[in-house]
Image (cartoon, rainbow, N blue to C red; front, top):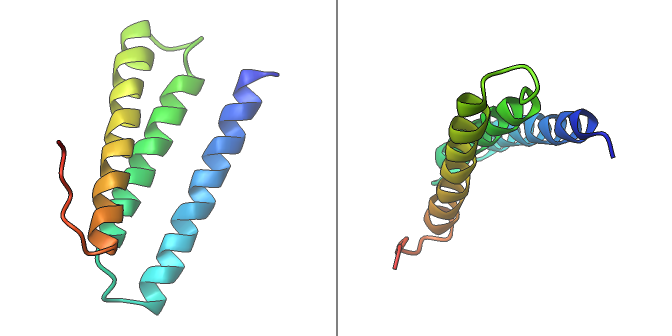
Length: 92
């Protein structure tokens, strides 16, 4: 499977999820945790974009920053889910 096509598909999916979050924010303006979810999706999109540029960009950017953005995406999704479900986010 050709990796840039896979990354473009994932990026398109994340962009559609951001559009869905915008629609949800307009429908339910008081929903808690939606802002964290948007930040998580932006971090995920940044990570995917950096991973897709691995043949062209320096390795420290495409490896360290991309993995950091992906980790931040996972952490923000966890915090967003805990806030939406109205439970305390525990990291232990």
